[in-house]
Image (cartoon, rainbow, N blue to C red; front, side, top):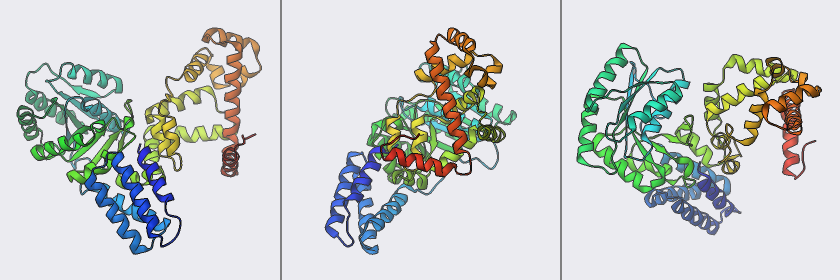
Length: 448
């Protein structure tokens, strides 16, 4: 996320070379203005941001450090809007959330993504298929519910009011933690749509009313969200298709323009690709400092603590096996796109764009490794040493997986090297060794 804006911040900062150089500050602000407008940040938001940065930098004294502090402070102020952050549970379950938006914004998929996000956090969720306007909307939600293993309430009713009424009764009787109501959209805002949504809101009395907006539509997303807010009183915005918008400008301005917090952003096509929008953390990512807290939360949601400890012991002993590899691959799949994860690591934001098309699940290399592992016996998966020096086992695995013997040898060698490297970095001097390796790579060398 925010590759373009993060890059523009770096370029602006480079313009300031000396203390008290007002000419350099003007150049930096001009660079920042040009980049922000190009990234689709609203012109009023840009003006306010630049004024704050200029005033604060001059007050503290012109210089890179003070410019950075002023920029960070101004960004936090712009991104922060009074209201909730992320997902907030009601004091008494179930927490009821209405999802609304125009057709094509990704509302139904986002409803499922939010359900999956909550499921990973051990919440019992009921999705309600109340979009009876769009053909196949109910069927789409049913398929997504089956895919993520979340319950759905869907009935052959002609009135969404009746669907929601019965779903809420079921949710209370069956002790669900959260109810997510997928409502109808339109290609454009009209009176009939608003009346239906007002009626449903009156019935459901939602704890939150999320407006789902397509980030690719730019400032149109802000205008349509403003109309929904005026009519319904939305409590949060979810921006979808954010992985396709390297500009990221809409995210910076939308909350400030509406006076409504941006709660989540969709960062990819897969179910795990939904992230809470926490202003302070987003500022860190914009400034190239990563988002370690979000990464830790995402990891904690999908990785079993007991298993993690067992794996650490195995790695320290150099006993990492193919079953462990498959377990870790499954955990990574639950965490979302590699691009999204990399962007959370400090200093790795620029690498994220290069990894945008990397698919851990469907890459040719992963498929070949999976095929090879599927051709192993349970004993071989648990003890790779059984295969390493046994040619007959390798030939059998190659034949069963459709790979050549050379390909099997290559994968086994890579796996063995990776296990040795992991063991090395898990030792007392692991971080020093890792830093040494990174320094070699930066210098153009390669770790031996």
